[in-house]
Length: 394
Ligand SMILES: *Cc1c(COP(=O)(O)O)cnc(C)c1O
Image (spheres, rainbow, N blue to C red):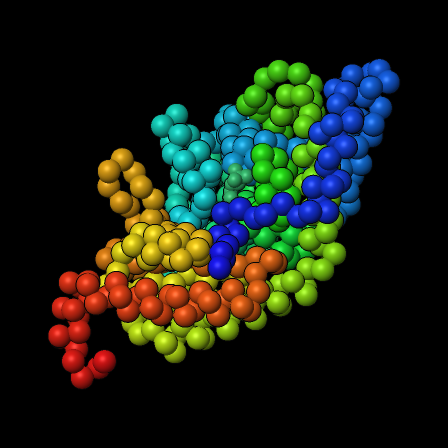
């Protein structure tokens, strides 16, 4: 059996979405910026896709640009604001659990002389609102906090943050890559100024993202070239992908609630079962509002990589929180920010469910996991040490 439980990394392209894209990969190939007869269909499809997305988000089509990915949308947002507002100030506030597309962009800005305050989060990865209020200064130009975290799934209090940002006349950016297509998002209603997302996280194509940019917020251009995407993201329009991301979003929002509940039920069943069958685990962010399909489990006294590889041999795809940097394995910055001990953080696995997962797949995963954890713990010196010290507990 092959089981894909890495939907937070990417999802399978929906067959219906693919069908919508095909004509724009073959039949209609005219440059959407050209004025001749070969561009009639592509220009129309591009405009329709932009309108579809704008209608869903309840924004104006001229407040939306297509980008090459979620990472690119994040980069354009952070760097575009930093550039446009540098004369007002160089201070930015962020959470410690942002995706590398934000985290490493901020690091680059620090190297360029910007000042970044990283807020603390609690044990469930929820950002500290009081610390946010205290961090605000006269030269603060931007607050960037993600909507829900990709590793543990925790939702952030973006409504509250938006209010604080507005009161202090600070621009607010939200990385909504993990939430778009999973919960309703109306940036204007919430008070978000900039919002990024990505097609391949909700069954659309890879290599296309979107960025909402509220009218009235200035933009410092980062990429230079032609006048596509309101001069903000030059490059010949990838109409097939635009059609794809719009079609995928339309489909995702057509049954948000049902899909959310279905995934959440399956995820909760998974967590209940493995909590009964495997000892010494932590279900991360269990007690707060989280993404329905995300389950981050810390298996104490084990290495995440060995669990991941053992599962992969059995056909099950998951992800570990750790990131390989040169030859050193670094524990996830998200888990560390939550206060999980580094020695346990290394034993964390993210299971991320999606709309194609079935109960049979989850049952297979539970059984396989129980076997693997038992086998790995039997040969783990840390586990045996723990067992000897706690004989009566196990
Ligand atoms: C996947 C992801 C990104 C990056 O999106 P890409 O389209 O893969 O570049 C950014 N932020 C979050 C929270 C993500 O999960």
